[in-house]
Amino acid sequence: MLKAAIVVLLLATVVSLFSGLFFLVKDEGQGSRVVNALTLRVILAALTLALVAWGFYSGQLASSAPWHF
Image (tube, rainbow, N blue to C red; front, side, top):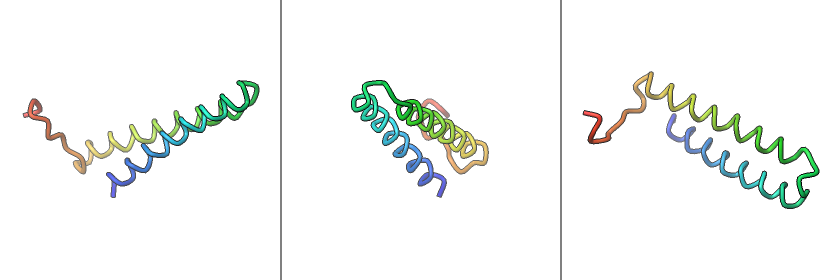
C-alpha cells in the first residue's frame, strides 16, 4: 500500500510540474496559477520524501542495492 501511495504522489508531482509549465506558457508569467502549481509540486515532493522516509523507518521499504550489504 505504501509503494502505491508513493507512485501516486510521484505521478501527481509530474502532473503538477507540467501544469505549471502549461500555465507559464499560457499566462506568459502574468498570473498566480504558476506559483500555485509549483507550490503544490513542492508539497507533493515533500510528502513523497516523508513517505519514503517513513517506509524505511518502519521497515516497509528496504534497499536491495548490492553495495548496501
